[in-house]
Length: 178
Image 1 (spheres, one colour):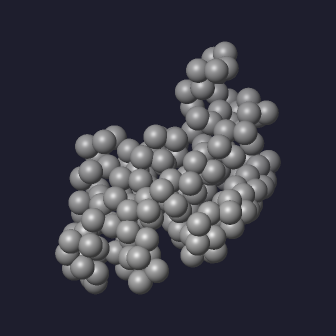
Image 2: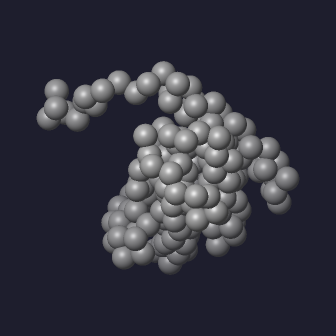
């Protein structure tokens, strides 16, 4: 089972509850914010936002969950996805090239965030509505979705000593994790 990556210890029920409530609130806020955006509808919710919520709320101390990888990773991959969709076209070959390019770019910019690869795929395979947005897709919905997620994560984790998000919070005194 270790070879398969089974976690050795179960996650504490209170941690699961905080993660679940946090993700419900965050995704709810993302939907509410999207209603006020131009073209305000649920098209503006990028599905990868759900995967980011899982990382941010279930693994708040994780390197891939921190604000830089979340925000910059998604925006960088959105730019790459939109660019490739416009320059190369859409389809499986473009999708494959896009994801590979995103991995290299996120590595170079030190912002690896796996759900961001799905954001790039959305830009390439999302259909005519996404293509029509062009580079606006990077700002709305991607940047706005990620800023909302990170802001909610910061606010919801503030009361918990064991859940420092982000890990480095210069506005608070240093506290040991645990």
